[in-house]
Image (cartoon, rainbow, N blue to C red; front, side, top):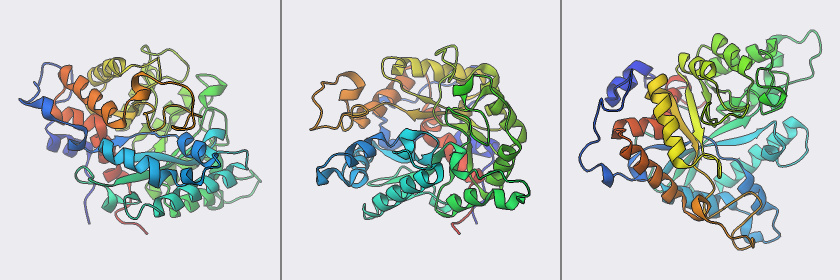
Length: 380
């Protein structure tokens, strides 16, 4: 049985330098410019299913295997090893319809499982530590299934339910391969307040605390993107494992209520968790994302940084726009390939003074460390 790596052991093994300013502490190795996306284990922290929904809505049957025919080839070309993919949740966009929360999530999960089966092994699911890549994937990509909001696991709060019965739906999603869950989307559910109801919002409900404890026991990643600030602080208090924001930026770089404040950042880091930064069209150019990486590295350490997403690519340039069916012209990031996205970002990190080891942690090594810590040793 593989022993989970502690944060200290992982970082010691990686050769990273932590604490204080990392810039100037280590110089990039000679020949750094030769490094490319396929040289790292890249974990994309959050990929919405808009592209899949957009293609399924088209009458053209050639579009109806979007994971096999369109998404996986681009991810493989880009050198992406793992994608955290929402398999349902609270948001209408993620559930692709106005079904009951549980039923909608089950439909999305079924769609993903069926789509992955079609790939003939080019795509697979991470269920346990045994599935975690030890080196960059070549010719294939893995999916880490997530729920974007806990509304799918909540039940009618009838009095007298034993706590074990209240957690039945969460366990069922786990049995089907889901290994992470954000506690809320923007709205409020029975677990907690989303940030859409106000930045501070309330703390976790009693049920929300129970859910975190059960996720810790099962071996699931606790997600806090879209959760209220007080909810994040409370989650950090009650969890026994790292909590992760897969796709949020930080204040003061962006000042919307969704972005993380310094107390939230420090609370996440105190658990050993990660802040996954994300590209937003016309708002967070890659240079600004690198500024955020530098800021977080200095304030809480390089081991607490990940990348949620680097933007739409030319294979699917925007929500509602499918190549061959869209009339709009795209430019910039949206007109580039995924490979170009990651290649540019790696180059900018290197130019800023980050070492290969540090870049490797940001691109995916930090999430790999957490999964080795929390996931079950082998699939049930």
